[in-house]
Structures are given as C-alpha cells and as structure tokens.
Figure 1: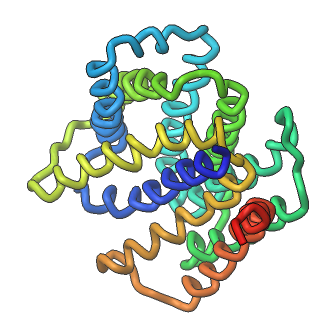
Figure 2: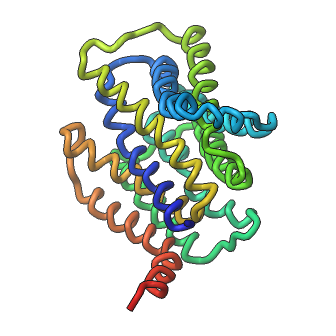
Length: 293
C-alpha cells in the first residue's frame, strides 16, 4: 500500500512537469485569471465523483482546521508564487520557491513514525543541485531591490512544504476534500484577478487546449494524487523526487522547441536521478528483499 501510494504521489510530480509547457502555450492570460479558471477545471473530476456517489459528500464535512490548511496551501502557495514573480526576477524567485522539496524531507523528521536518514537529506541536496543548474542556467544576480519578491518566494516554499507535512497528519481525511480546496482557490483567485488584473482571453483553440490541460493535470489531478501520496506513501521519497519536476519540465520545453539543450541539462539529470534513487534506497532494497525468487 505504501509503495503504491508513493507511486501515485510521484504521478503528481510527473503532471507538474507539464506546468511550464502548458503555461507557455496558454497565451498571455494574467496569472490570477489563469489560476481561477484552472482550479475551477481542476475541481471537475472531484465534482463528477461526488455526483456519481452522493454518499461521499458527507466526507466534505471536516473541521475548520482541515479547510484552513487546504485553502492556505493551494491558494497561499500560488498567491505567494505570483507575488514573487511580480517582484523579483523569475530565475532567482523560482529557485528560492523550489526549496520546498528539501524542506519536506528535513521537516518529515518531525512527523510521527518517520525517521530522517542520511540518504534522504543527501538525495534532496543532490536534487537541489540539479535544480540550481536548470533554473540558473543564465546565471544569478540576487539584488536587495527585490527583497519583497525573494521574501514571497521563501514564504512560498515554506507554505507548500508546511501544507504537505500537515496534510500527512490528516491521513484519515478523504482526498475528496481537495475538490473543495480547488473550488475555494478558484474563487479567491477570481477575486484577486478582479482587483489586480485586466482580463485577457485565449486567442486560439490551441491556447484554450493548453488552459484545459493545465486545469485537468498539473493544476487539477496532480493535487488529488499528491494528497493521497503524502498521506499514505513515503513523504521523504516524494520530497526528494519532487526535484525531478523542473528537470522533466525542461525536457518537455526542449522537445517542443521552447528551450535549447545544453550540458547543464545532462548534469542536472544525473544529479536529480541519482538523488531520487538515493532517497528511495530503502524502498528499492525492501522491494528486492520481498520479491519472489
């Protein structure tokens, strides 16, 4: 069960690898408008399940702390991420925001029944090194003029790591509640859009397809898979493996012509893959030990 849940959680990482590609292909829609539409689409799978099985609606009756955690996790992360990108260069903001996998691995030591081992930490650090190569391929230039953006990026990383770690403690709560989180995030994003942005609609069917793809996968199904994975799988492995997302995302951009290949990509691949394998060492050895001879 734990291995299966870990693999389901990893499917979220694979879907997040499509985030940059679909976002690049979605046109010039402002971020909060895009977030509002995508999270509304992302709630549809859960709504379909609830419509087909009305008895599951009772699973949405959860204490306020569950709803606060989920809404702050999904909406808070995206609000802070967009704020960081508005107030700091994308490269530096992206790198800081992507500290969350390392924070999950280290923070998991505080969870009941979890033991932080050297391979988890080293695996996460290797993954971070690979991310530095990917995100910082054009160099870094941290400037105190962008402190607001850097601060938002740090809070962004802590928000998603905190959400993931706290969610682990709510393992008895059904993943159905993610439907409500998506709907609430969509509504809050719409309010931010109305207050802060000018509406821009996609200009072609291709751009609409990209928006739909965002909503169904990286801003939809991925959150259901992540919720199930962190509640029932190996959260330390998932944390370290999360560094595969920017690498896979870059590969997608290269394959579709949005980016160029380089030696950094190859080295980052070795670091991220090696880090993920090292972090998953115990699970891999355990599976070999239990395999039939």
